[in-house]
Length: 305
Image (cartoon, rainbow, N blue to C red; front, side, top):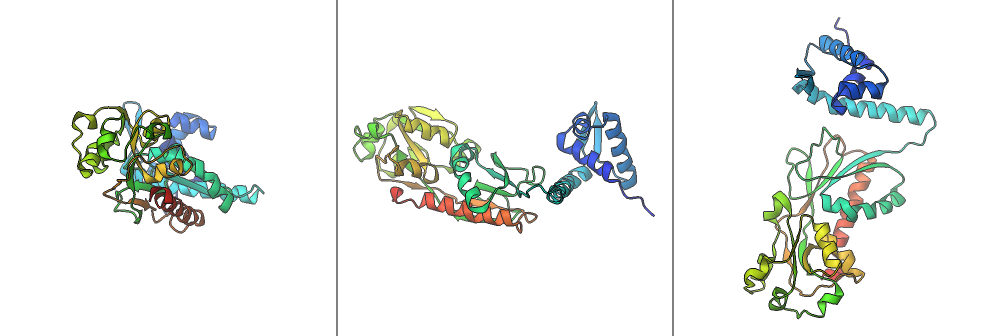
């Protein structure tokens, strides 16, 4: 009869793999690094598979280790939840949410209180990530991204956005509602990173307006996130091209105005990806429905019509 790995051995492996260090795992579990090493070696012998490759005093997960880690982490988290519930501590569901960095910095973080008020307390980990994201390694439950990046997981398109010229009210008095006037004002450009080719630029906007702006389409301030570009526009430093999901609230409350009516639709939709391991969890289902509603409400704001 084959001996099954001990719970302590599996716990030692999970802690070492998650933290990336035998020493860190030893500190977390209040044992010595030598004990962690011995426990993991015993698990490897019992399973007949290497879980780590040892290279120059470093340990790197093997394929078998990569496969085991997310399942063990989830199992130990579930054990911890049951233990807290049995000991009388209030049960709080755990949720790992991954969104683009600009959405994490302000837009979603300001709205999370509304979700908690409606659906109850939860231990939410909000991550601002660029694509691609490691779903299993980081145990991500739900990912909002621009475009369908994750064919290996269930993905749904939730809303198609557009970009709008926006600026502070004090700047709008200098602008006539046409492209020629905008070409003479300071512009705010956004470097959207690796997916930037999919987002309209100021040159695209002027072309759609039938205007040849010359070098004006390249001059002005530049920011490497939508959130930063929006803040620069609110500060009165120029006219930004902003996605509706981000700028709707500021246009509604008067911090920004639309100096020109022309908008350019984005080429792809915003998509939600939920791995199958998370899809049936009540807190994930509730957050999905709430997030879709928040996104569609912003993109469909009357202030953008």
